[in-house]
Image (cartoon, rainbow, N blue to C red; front, side, top):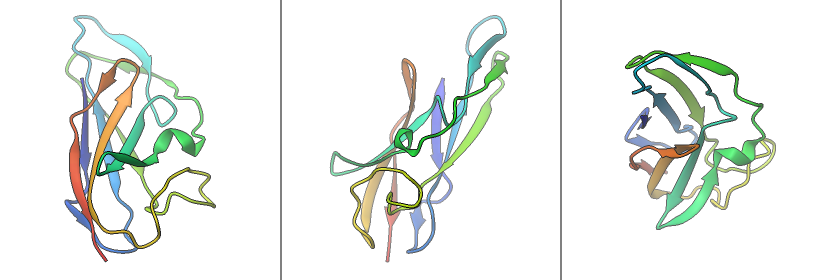
Length: 121
């Protein structure tokens, strides 16, 4: 199971949104899977248009993590709001953009629920 939470409901100008992604195994036995920024992506949209995708940030390969049934593993991914150099991340959000945005976390075959948040000036 994959869950995504935002650290705040609204972010003022200059504040980076932080996304907390939790993965929980529902398997009956322990398993080992890659888990990290290289295996989980967060996609931010506005009006259905992708404005940022963390998978374009060139994260290193995720390391194997041992999952126990029902025990969550947390990963934090932050977004610079501009999604431009020098971070190396692609995006289409203009500087100073505000409004309501949606975010979802994804990994192979799984996705979280969609969360909405605000960017304010």
